[in-house]
Each structure stands twice: as structure tokens, then as C-alpha cells.
Amino acid sequence: MSAVRRTLEADIKELEEMVLQMGSKVRESLRLTVKALKERDKDLMNWIIKNDDVIDELARQIDQKAVATIATQQPMAGDLRVLIGIIRTITDLERIGDLSESVAKEGLKIADQPLLKPLIDIPRMVEIINGMLEDALQAFMLRDANRAEKMCLRDDEIDGLRDQVQRELLTYMIEDPKTITRATPLLVISLFLERAGDHTTNIGEHVIYMVTGEVKDLNI
Amino acid sequence: MTSIAAKMRTESVSLFYGKNQALKQVTLSIPRNQITAIIGPSGCGKSSFLRLFNRMNDLIPSTKVEGQVYLEEQPIYNARIDVVELRKKVGMVFQKPNPFPMSVFDNVAYGPRVHGIKDRVHLEEIVERCLKQAALWDEIKDKLKTSALSLSGGQQQRLCIARVLAVEPEVILLDEPCSSLDPISTMRIEDLMQELKRGYTLIIVTHNMQQAARASDFTAFLLAGELIEFGPTKELFTAPRDSRTEGYITGRWG
Image (cartoon, rainbow over all chains, first blue to last red; front, side, top):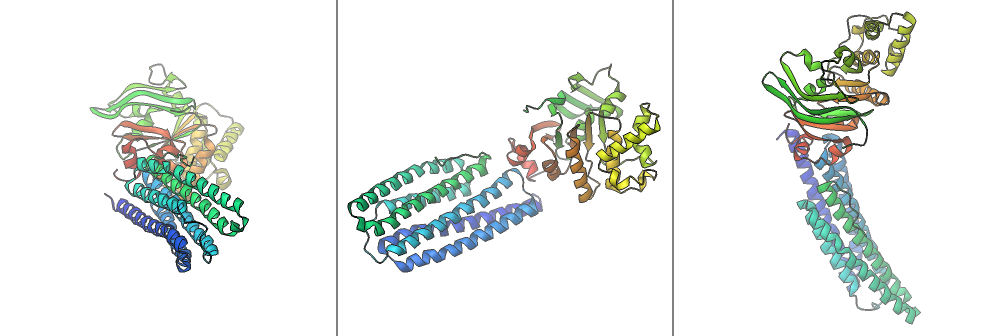
């Protein structure tokens, strides 16, 4: 193998590892939102908000390195698709990070009052998204388009849970308007999480593009 | 493969140099008014393939061609064909600029003169039109009487293109036209190709993959005399169908 080829492969490998690192930071933030909400832990919420800066910085570094690789190595075909896939993937990871931060900010609004109800569906949503994200990152590393496509199917569960959360909170608010200030942040959180699920399926689409060159819309 | 009508096409063409088979049953359509790039590693037969289109291989002793090549659906490997007339319709630009050792004007006027045009005013019109088409007029309109050999390499190559244009071809074959040029001159030639494709069909052989990706509409990948893949350039360079194409254009080998 030529030295030039080795440089390109080493660059791509390093980028993949950076994406994995970013992915695990995003998953950590997302996972901790549940603990922070359940325990009304303001310190943890603030930590999640701060952790987003770390995630953003990683995204910036990956983006810079990927662009430099494209400019200096002029990749083609599969290599080019992988680099484009990486750039797109970090955009979605970064958005999931932002959404976790937003969840934490909503959480701060209700942290001083008892929870309106025990949290069941929201933790379930987070759990599914986190699992999907793990699958997406695995599929990314293994270039496994099937796994990515299968992962995307689980997005329906998230949409179902969001509907359930909304119905339930609406009932609370209709029965007793005094609950509105405590219910609204939870309602907003369910929307944020639904968006996080959509960004996760986007990553699945990027993996499919990286592997096959096909652009599929799995966000249905 | 493509909905654009074929200007030229090859049908199961095999080419032999003595006992050596340089091309193996290549069937390919060249879309009209488009730029088709032919890529592949050294020795894959791409220049041999290009020379089929105006029977330049005839000039190399002991070559044998099987199959057929068509220009506007007329077979060109045919005893009745006038090869001089064919090469007028299918012009060629070579790797190294090869201007004749005469003035700029005479270089461009050479072809039309050979084909019987004597009238000075008419020749002047042709020279001006072709130099303009070759994006050279503004640079050398005051130097028409100077020797073509005094021009820069990039200007010489554009002069050679102007010389081809002067005989009003339909197809222009370019055999690595930028391999001896600097990046700026290369860009000028590539710009020129984009201009020319409105009126002509272009086929370019290039060693430079980035050039094929940048400058062509369709790309054919040849390997060891075989056509491995042909398709729109954008598809071939982003998602090639054949793993050998992928291997070559990503630099895994070749």
C-alpha cells in the first residue's frame, strides 16, 4: 500500500475514534438527564449543560480534521462517502448533545418543586434513544448498513411514547390548571427527546450512505 | 446506460498489437455533446482505445482490430471509408503540444489550406474564430505572425486545439492534453473543454483522476484492456459499482 493511502486510512481511523469518543460523551449526557430529572439534581443538570461545551469542541475538532483530510487527500468513492458521513454524523450528534442540554435546562425550571408524577415514559424514551445511539455508532464502526436500518425502525416506539406523555400531561393540565407550570417543561422535554430520536435515525441514514452510497429517508 | 444519444460507439472491439491483445471486446457508447473521460492504470489500453475512434492505430504496424466502431451509426472500420475525411471529423490533441514550426496563423490555417481553402479573408476569419473558441485570441491576437514555438506550453496546447477546430470536426479526442502543463494552464484547458462541449463531442484520456472527476460528464474505467465500468462521472466517483473501480480511484492499488 502506498504511503499516501496509508495516511488517508490513518486519518479516517483517527476520525472514527474521535466520533466514537464524541458519541460516548453525547450518550452520557443523554443518560444522565433521567437521573437529574428523577432526583431533581441541579448540580447534575448544570454538569450536563457544561458537558455540551466539551461535545461542541469535539465536533469542531472532528469537522476541522475531516475538512483538512478532504482538502489534502482528495478522497474518492467509499473514502469520500465515509468522510461526508462523518461530517454529517457529528452534526446530528452535536444536535443530540444540544437537546440533552435543553432537557437539563427545562429540568432546572421544575427542580425546586416535587415532580408532578413519577417519571416512567420519559426515562423509557431516553433508554430507547440511548440504545439506538449505541447501535448507530456500532453500525458506523462496522459499516453495517443492515444494523443501521434496523435501528431506525425503533424510532416509532419513541414517537408512540411521546404521544403517550403528551396525552397524560394534557389530562393533568385539564383536570387542574395549577399543574401547568410543572407539566409544561415535561411536555417540552418529550418533544426534545423525540427530536433526539430523529437525529439518531439520521445517523443511521448516514451509515447507510457511507456503506452503499444510497440516500434513504428512514425518518417516517 | 445513458439517455443521451450516442455520437460514437464501439461494439465488441478487440485490438491486437501482433500477438498482444490490448483491448478485449469493449462495447461503449460515447454520448453526444458530452465529455467522456477514459481512466485506468498505465498500460490498461486507454490511449489505444482513444486511437480507435479516428483509426490512429492504423499507423502502428501489425495492429489488428476486431469488432466495429461507429460514427453516427456509420461503421468506420470499413474499406470504403476515407480515413483522411474521418480524421477531419474526429480530431485529435496529443499529450505534448505539437505545433508546427511555423507562425501561429499558419498553424491554424494549415488544415483549411490542405482542404482547399485559399482565400486570405476566409482564412483570417477561420483563424480568428478558432483562436477565440480555443480561448487564445485575446492573448495572442497581436502575435499571429510570430512562431508558434515561442508560445508557452499552455498556449501551444490551446493552439493545437484551435488547429483541430479549424477543420470543423465533430468529435475531439484528447490524449492526456494537460500532462505537460502547469495547474493554471490545465484549468484553462478544462474551462475550454466545457465551452467546446456545446458544439462538439469530447473524449479525453487522463492519468489524473481529479481531472476526470472535475472535467468530465461520463467516465469509463479500463483495466487490462477490459471495460470495467462506465457511467456518469458523479456516480462513478462517489459510488462505483465495481470493487475494482473503487480500488483504483481510492488509490488502494494502481
